[in-house]
Amino acid sequence: MSDFRIAVVGGDGIGPEVIAEGLRVIEAAGVSLDTVDYDLGGARYLKDGTVLEDKTLSEWRELDAIYLGAVGAPGVPPGVIERGLLLKMRFDLDLYVNQRPFVLDGSHNFVVIRENTEGTYAGEGGFLRKNTPHEIATQGSVNTRMGAERCIRYAFDLATKRNNHLTLVHKTNVLTFSGDLWERTFNEVAEEFPDVETAYNHVDAACIYFVQDPARYDVIVTDNLFGDILTDLGGAVSGGIGLASSANLNPDRLAPSMFEPVHGSAPDIAGQSKANPIAAILSGSLMLDFLGATEAAQRIDVAAKACAEVTGSTSEIADAVIAKL
Ligand code: IPM
Ligand code: MN
Image (cartoon, rainbow, N blue to C red; front, side, top):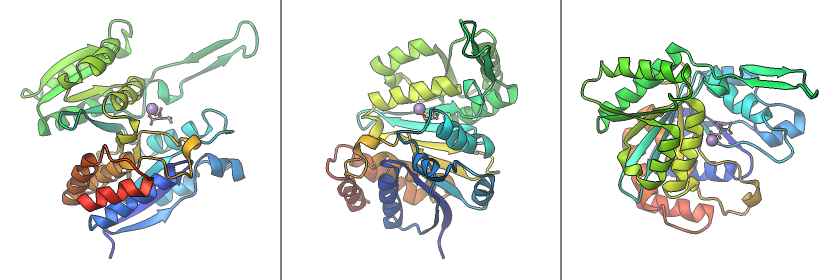
């Protein structure tokens, strides 16, 4: 009897290499998975045009989680895989929280809660008079009260389980509509969490603090695009994107959640056993934690972080993690 049924999308480039090691570490931690492999990503698209079919999403709804490596391949036009696979997955399964934890020099850790279904990612906008000198392109930021509130509420709740500190990051001085909605919602939800100390940073200032004083943060909540950018910066200031893990969560558990490293498919180093599997391994730990296998998740988390400096081939780094379990 396996513990969980998991859809595995190794994807492109280094994706399958790092996910294979992540699965090996999970088994070594004593959790048995029943995996279903899905050949999806840029390479599959180039082969037969398939991106992500509705019937695949229906199959996933019967499973416990999705474990994804990285998608994206040279030769695929921008947006096809991003919108057609990754965003489709996030939107269709309503994975409205993108949780991205970071560790600074092995001790202080903080976590970014990125709204994952709205903002500039929603797809609002279009062209007028395309390919004329008067061409117009708009790309609106869609912010619903419900969408902001559920994400903010999740972040407050997480703050109570950590150190009772939550920072809202936005750009309220310029984005006076969406920023206003976010700030009002944040302040209203804050009243329900009197023990949580709150702070606010404009996103540009937050970029400075990420570099100069990231230890001021514990939990951050922000919108989709700011969260995208800030979490790459978070990776860069906390030991590199090779260590950055993420959980795309449906906190209400109405659909399976998806777990993936923040890094991309890195086609330049694919197939050479050069990829660091730590981010994928830590994403596996986030998956087990969310599924309730908290003890194994914790052991993997500690072992993987202890191996943050280990060098070697992809499987040698995973071996080092397994040795520490
Ligand atoms: C990420 C990625 C994606 C995003 C891309 C690949 C669509 O950069 O997960 O951070 O922008 O969300
Ligand atoms: Mn990104």
